[in-house]
Amino acid sequence: MEPRPKKLLDHLREVIRLKHYAYRTEETYVQWVRRYILFHEKRHPREMGRLEIEAFLTHLAVQQQVAASTQNQALNAILFLYREVLNLEVAGVSAIRAKRTQYLPTVLTPQEARAVIQNIGGAQQLVVKLLYGGGLRLCEGLRLRVKDVDFAQHQILVRDGKGSKSRVTMLPNSITEELRDHLVGVQRQHEQDLGRGFGAVSLPYA
Image (cartoon, rainbow, N blue to C red; front, side, top):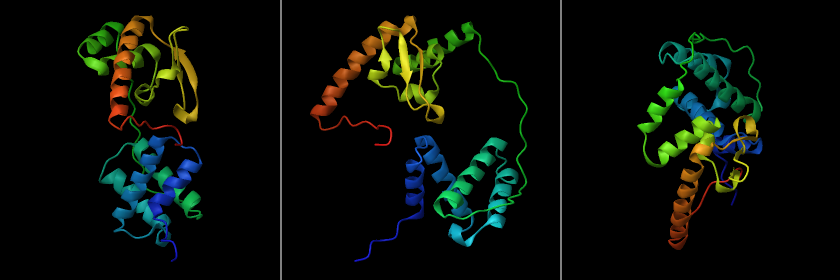
């Protein structure tokens, strides 16, 4: 029997993983390609091109009123599909572009940050303390593994961060003991999970 043809989105995932893109990028690109196909009533992208891409991007800007960064993200995902998966070049894409908002970032004072942290409980509070004290991004804090925490040197090794780069950041002294206690509980929970046949974890490219 001949093997069944590979589904387009599965092929897209494979190409993204071969290029070692971040998992969140993979999920985002797949989502945008799926939306693009559904917008054009499930037509195959090979049957479409510049005009259909422009129509989708214009829809995002006018009807969906997405931010400029969101529209660019959708465009990058679709162009990746054509260039890297379908081996097709699409040039001269021109659509109504979403307006870039001009705003100043809101930065909390130390007192305001403490007030926010005090109103969070449990493991979530510990994660926020790590983000604030160690300068971690949200996904970096949630993916942190035991072996990446160096209590002796008060350091955290952030692996496979933004742009697939790794870096070292500080482990705040104020949460060292709290983090140790948390890891004791996590180890106990892990041993219980292993006893029940669970305990799996996601690893980069695995």
